[in-house]
Length: 101
Image (cartoon, rainbow, N blue to C red; front, side, top):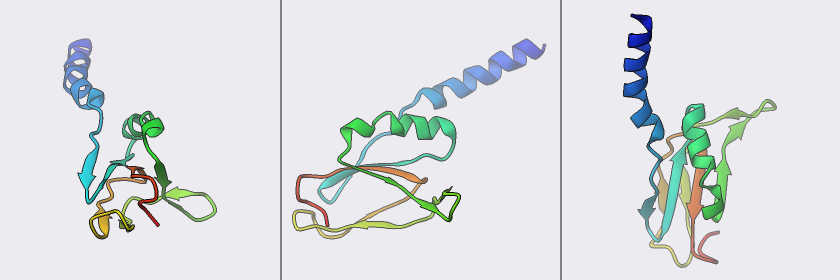
């Protein structure tokens, strides 16, 4: 009975775990934010080579992760200020060269 319940739980959890986060487009850049939980953090970190900017928001001497931080990106080639909703402490950005400041 325990094995059956464990297999049922695994069958429900696997599709959510296997689903990679998707890049979002806004104002001339793309972003991928999240990282709440080890699975989400690892999935985003795995895509860091395709990003031009990586943000990891922490606070204090122990480096506690921050999730509720508003990130605003501005630059001469962007379509105005881009406000990125934060869904975790890790955020990857794809921006054109010389697009941010």
